[in-house]
Length: 308
Figure 1: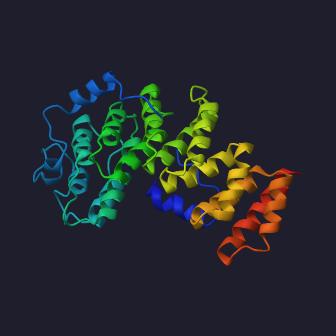
Figure 2 (figure 1 turned 30 degrees about the vertical axis):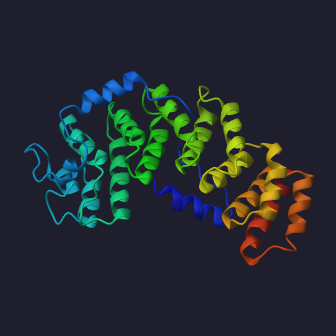
Figure 3 (figure 1 turned 90 degrees about the vertical axis):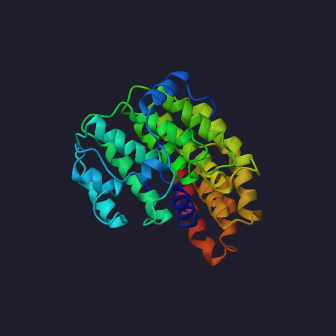
């Protein structure tokens, strides 16, 4: 999983359906909160975690390299070490890595982008342990629920919670976080959560697809929502076949000042198909800018295919 803001913008500009990254509004459950507090009690999950200068003797070299205790502490050293982490990390080793994930202070020798990537790749490795770590849900929840965390890190936590849903038993806690995040309309992670809920609703009956569709339509219609979330919501409406968004999509394609939003609307019209949308797209082809031309052509092809 890579940085969601960049992915969504890229997919919109290419006018293809936004990828199904696996990902409104209930509070963090008291049970999960107590679990996380018990897990991290007595340990500092803030800047001290990033600044720690020594590691316990039982921590293997790969873990030490990830933390920057060995090597030069730079991006390449840490990134290479993540791929060498054992698939059977002990609880002690995992807890040390959780401290790093929960820390907010960026090491001086890492750029912000590198810091994001290291944490993201580390979460991938932890999710791929031979035995799923049961405490990882609490860690991801803590990362998301901490409003002082970098917004990108909170967004990553929502992505990983979506991926984690089908692996672990505490699905209710994860769905609560996803719905809560989808309700944060001023943040881009609202769109990230919506994408996760959309994908999960296709395979998990406990995630109500009608509720997901209603949330997507509401976000698509909201002019004050985070711009990236609106781009996502418009396309999710198309992917879910919500015909009632057709008029809005045509209006956005004609009038929006945002090129990514216009392209998203055009893609949605292709996903929805129908005679009215196809006629609109064929007419739009004659006035499309160079940047819109590929999007309109692709949408026409999809609309025609749906009508066969």
